[in-house]
Length: 252
Length: 209
Image: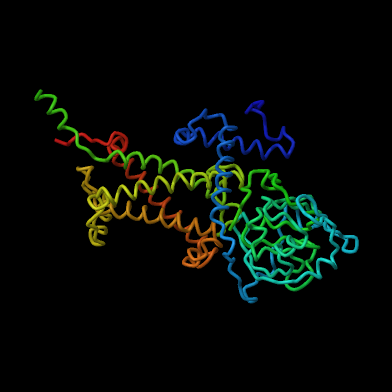
């Protein structure tokens, strides 16, 4: 890895690089504390090795969380009076940039380890047995909000399409170029929904029209919106935030 | 032969090896947990302030979370060794007890007036006993409230004891505040009585004659 001179101003770099440089500077500063040298046990300035160690710990925590996950443990549900109003909008872009998906031409694409991968239209999806839940959405940033989502149990849908339920991952691709993936155990959890409604109304664009995956046993960023395609696989698919360093399992 | 014996007698044992090792590992673990925790707090502040970025670890939220969820294992494993040792060896019983509210108030008052005698470093006065016990309890509260925030579904019974997810966040914040305050007072006292510092490394202190 080429080492950059520390005397350069941050303004000399294009914006996307600045965050990564800031991160390096912080690691360097923190590592110059002698105390941390004892922990990392490696060259103080070799921040790539620290990153490797932290990533390895994150993978270890994925394993611990998969072990802690109880497929029968339900997320707490709340009365309608507990719903947070207004429910906050959150994405990697601003509310002005919310994608509009055309309902009439929409088809959910299926791929990977699925026996019957024919695309699904919205009326076909709406005809599946529907259920609803009032649960707490917890953001990785720390805040939380309670909302009401309705849709089909994801396990019902996976069974209907003949998904390989022994596969490891289900991945999602979204209209806003977001992507994410979850473990099969969580995909089969009774509260994991392919959600078409929010507060008993058709999911508005800002909450992910035409559908979002509602996973009350995971952090908010593991609830992809505007889902266009999904696939079942044994190859780790990663995700938009996960690939940048956020913990993959991120279970609640 | 007599001279050697006399020289040895000038030193008294203050801190057992387990206490010294776990103390310094704890310093590293708490430092990482607090500074990365501040960065995580800043992503969605509970109150009307943020911690200055220069005091935080991780650079951004994902980095801070990586540090926090790596160092939590160090904090918990080290704390477990310390607490089990403290109970089984009788270290806690000998050093921290008895403790009475009256004695704590008296010694804190004496310390504030700068009149608290601190001759025998192997003996903890009531002010020290209360501070060290409060620190142990605060770290235990931090660990459990942290678990409740991390796993509000899988450990929902634990979270419910703290008023649910949002209650656990508040408790985690206040326990952190208590730990930081106790640590600051602790560092101040070491600065005021500097001969206590090498004892936490060597474990020994020269007997006052």
